[in-house]
Structure formats: structure tokens, C-alpha cells
Length: 303
Image 1: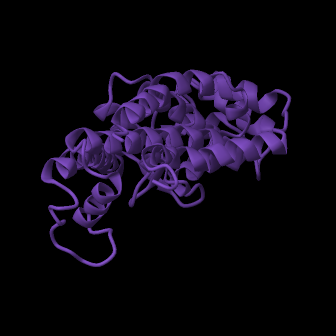
Image 2: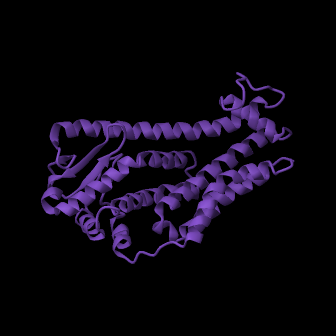
Image 3: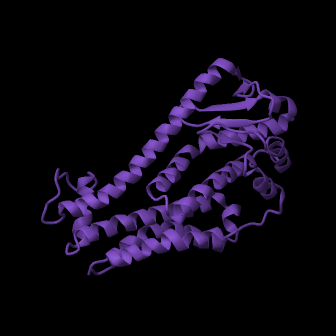
């Protein structure tokens, strides 16, 4: 049985219908890390379904198990070390089509990662010329009339705060803002952003790609907020964000203010409703299972 039609139908559900279902759930803002995990589980599931469908379309009479083994060997991941997949188990087109999908996604990820890294490197060079390093704040202070703070993540990470923010904010507020930026650096959130951008580049027409890119920006800020709130008060972080809501950030950076500030302030100061453990466990189980579903669709047990 050729599984391509079923896989393509499954990919359509994941790429079009699933985002509408996830976006309705208020739980994702209560547990943003789990929300981000669900979005990326959907990305992985859609990609795997597309890869398997491409393999089946290229070799409709071939068995999927053989095609998968050939694909793994071609990537150097299979058992043993055959340099070239056996043509009796995996034809060239059956490998070329799925490999092209994987190559496109990985290539787009590396491209966005490199482009953002170059933008951050150029900005760091400018900061070295006009900024002043503060050992007390463990940050670079930049002369600017608007209160702002942001981080440049990566191997040579940098926390930047304007001198207007240093003058305006209380010590507690400033500490909370800097902790928020460090949370982005420690969490390596730039990698998550690059992955979302890569998927949107390869599948620009897909609702899942657009929604994931939009949601990732919000959820990563909320994840950094939650990490900050472990050691700082809600009021300190919220009032600091309000003071810096108009602050702008350079390309490739994460900022404490910005377009999501109002939503996050409401979340921080509003009533904190705990997510029921059953709901949390169910969502986590779905996030773990969804990437594997295309394999079950294509290779049902006993086949």
C-alpha cells in the first residue's frame, strides 16, 4: 500500500487545522515552554510527514522500511557504515526527494543562524566603540534617550542597557530587566527563533509556519519572564517593562520591551491560574507523540 495520500492528508491537517486548535488554548500562555514544545512538535511532525510522502511519491512500489534504511544510510545514521545505499532497497529518486526537503530545512536554519550572527557581530563592533562596559551591571551601557535593554545572544553574548534606563529604573527594576535578558542568553533562544524562521522560509504559505513564527516570539519572552520571576517580584518586572515599552531592539536581539510588552504585563500582574496537572501531562504527551505519528501512518504495526 502506498501511504503517500494518507501522509499528505495528515500533513495538511497538521499544517492548516492544528494551528487553529492550538491558538485557541489559553494554557499555552500559562505554560509557555510547553506551548513552544507543542509548536515545534507540529513542525517536526509536518516535516517528517512531508519527507515520507516524498519518498513514497518517488518510489510508489517500494517498501517504506527499505526507503527509510536507505535514507538513514545516506545520512550516515544507519547501522553499519555502507557508503552508498543498496539500489535494490532504495532507488535514487526515493532518496533524492526526501533528502531535498531535509536539506532545504537544515540549509534555511543555518542561513538564518549565520545571518543573525553576522548582524549581531556588526552590532557588537559598534558597541565596542560607543558603549561603556559596566562590571557592576555585567552589561554594556549605551548612551540613548529612551529607556531600553536588550541582549545579543550567541557565543559572544552581550547584555545592553541604555543610560536612560539606568537613570530611570530603580535598582530592583533594573536587576529584573537584566535577569530577563540573561534568561534569553542562557536559554539559547536565538536557536529557537532561527528554527522557526527556517521552517517559514521553506514553507512560507503554510499557516503552521506563520503561526509558529509569531507564537515563538511571544512564548520566548514569556519563558524569559518566568525565569526572571523566580528571583524578582512581579511588580518590579512589570513596571520596568512598562517604562521600556517603547524601547527598540536591533536585528538578531531580544528586548525587554517591544510589541508584546502589554500582553506580558497583563500576564505578570493578572491572576495566576495554575494549569491542571492532567492537562499539562496530556499536552506533554501529545508533544512527544505527534512527531512519531507520521511513522505510524506510513508503517503501521505488523506491516
